[in-house]
Length: 447
Image (tube, rainbow, N blue to C red; front, side, top):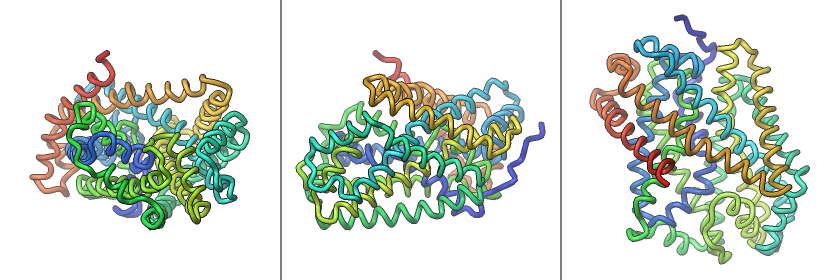
């Protein structure tokens, strides 16, 4: 079978690593990871997270990139090729179908947050949150959601930036974005950490984040560590397959993915150090999610010296993070339309961005009208996190570990030492598959 070969490739290994890295950082590292550490024992959670990240999540992302790198096509074409050369049923295309669907549904939430972060960056630098009370910050968010026209304008702007980036393709669009986004994110986090160290309660934050509290760590804590490890590397949403298709020839895939994972860990810790001292300095309880980003932190910045400036920089960092992941989630479905159905890239990118924008607008409007919007967002999260992504990840691990010829995989990982390849092959077969299967059963099927 002849595949449609992508015209473009990443300019270098560094660009590939940057692209995966900015996609992997995600919102979870900003609004969830540090909270998970503090709630689940601090250091015990962190070490279990590292084990899950490097011995389960990294091998799975390597498997995705291997498929993309050798297939050199959209996720659908890549899985079609892989099934054919392995002598397996075309039903394995289900992996690509589930992954692309999960990624697109996840994109809706990221587009929502990208727009909100732009709105808050603008509002906070105007001084709208200066000396505000915690209740006032909550009321401000509720009022903005209840009258969503302002938020919708910012969501539309975020959607335009997203579509334009993907329309320009791998080299002139996404490749340029990642070279701007990664250094910018590092710089912003550095500036915010300095601010947090100077004006925040670093001692209290350190005690919360890094204390050794084994009694707070249980089986649920391990599942949380595993879930975050899988979520943070964008596994099961076709990003690895899509970006791997544009990888340079003779790429040391395993070492490149390990570099991405290390960057992800550093950013997660940096985000915690930048955020939580500000909460404790303002006598706020540790939080996560929407409450952290759009209520607790605006209150904290609004009641600190230079808070309008540093608050705007923080929400700019949130936007950069959300945009980097959103681009990675949109690219797989655009490549499917472009290569499988011969739709022009500009039409595919604009159409899919428009659909994602309309779904995010629906969630926002209904969120302001009552409980239905929250239910819609919860439905999106439930479908993707509890069903689509676990199913895609499990099928991916089974296919690569147990259905693809070892010799074919070794050829694609020829740049890696034998011991590293053997370790990866063992982990994908005998660790990833049973652990993912058990975790899915534990989290989704046990009442």
